[in-house]
Length: 494
Image (cartoon, rainbow, N blue to C red; front, side, top):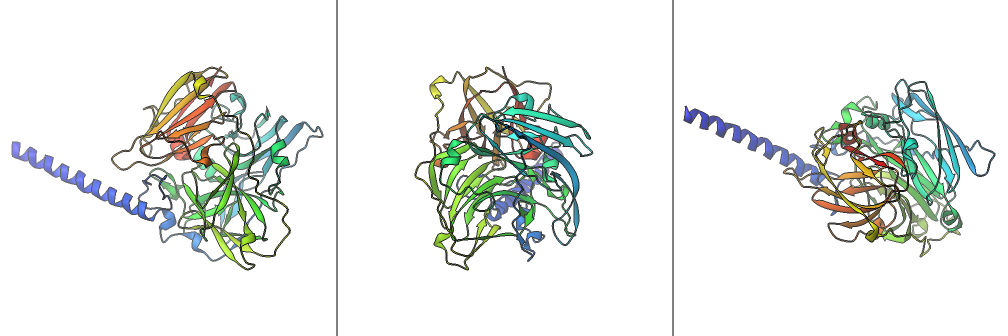
């Protein structure tokens, strides 16, 4: 009897060992092949990245001129009031081979316009939900009260309208808006609900940087999507263990995009609008470019680099100087092992812009005034994700914060037996400053205002936050499938 029990135990142990070895091999292969590489990147736990598979629709030869989102018209005659109408629409989009896919969009079939506002202005958004399901509209990165933040507590029913009013009280920045529907955020964003919000101020207007929208100031919403063999957008096929990964890159909704550029300086506002993919942006030539802005606004001075990492939800503005290239040169913005956007260098052009040595003054938050230190432990994988061992409960307030208090938040991502993965940590209603990564001062590119920070395996990231807005807000992993699975908590500022 004892021998039989021992035999069963040994057999079970052997099966576990074989399964673990197979899984670790898959992780190792993914690490070697994935675009998610570099010293700051964690291990991707997806067994196979669809971008590396043979079933990659992005390998088609058809190129598309990069679409430029429309600027939404301000309907207000008052110079200090901005008035906009947004329709949440359901339609179809043919991304390839005239195959129609069911998609969502703001004021159209896929993605949305750019809303441009000014600091200190009052903004009115008139939203009409034309979907057959409820939605919300979250203003990602905007410092506004919780009752207009657009979280899961503010659903807009199918066929209904909502008037959203707020005042802009933060510096020039590239923000964005997207749904934050309870349990449905990932799919609604995947189908196309995302748009950009530009904040302008006296600093952005006075700097002699590229700022002619659609000419030398270009938005780039970078997303990966999965298309099946028929060329149809498929959310279900993108479902992996830790978020939706696609086999095709879209930029502003276009596959294989190209942009004809003159030999001038060009400003690109990069937005990682993917559900789960982390990008490592580089030029195919290996040349440097300069980052001038992070999530919440300008850096104090431009930062030269040849690689820029962005997790889901993060943004950055960069300037590429094309004057160094000969006419007829072709180069690419890459995301790792794949191309994102093709540049065709054309005529000389006239360029009176510059990349200044100094951009703006950033007021540093006082670490000594921080009255509270809070710790957040990011754990799990797949649907078994949590923060501090808890999953989201709409009826539970996890934290109480006093208005105008400054706090230190310490976010840890412990390494597990599988190596772990990176989590982009987003906080609603604030812009924060990164204090350290594993006790080391952050890179210059992370010393500006942030609302989302990538926390890698076995890493401890400290951030400093001042809470200036009242209401109920979320903090969560911005891998959207993780958010929907409960990797989210709530804090109330009062």
